Image (tube, rainbow, N blue to C red; front, top):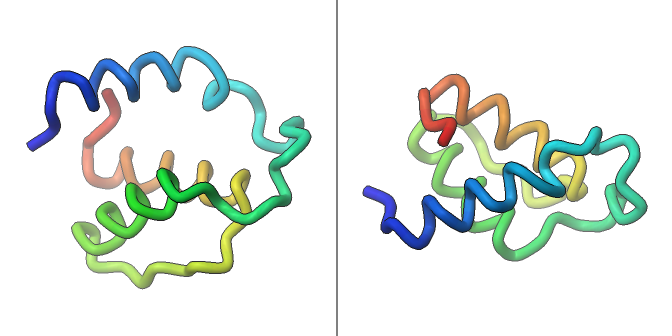
Length: 75
């Protein structure tokens, strides 16, 4: 499903920027990153939900967290 490298990278990210409140992100209102876009596309597809390309970085992060919980994918 996920490579060991992807899991380690996700754990590293989870312990740093993703743990901060997205409302406090300086760049939180910018468009989501390519990595967020790719991961969110996969999650929404798996969850049977619609993907919204217009999400900000902060909104994408919140959506990712929600879908990870829904799909039991929290690392």
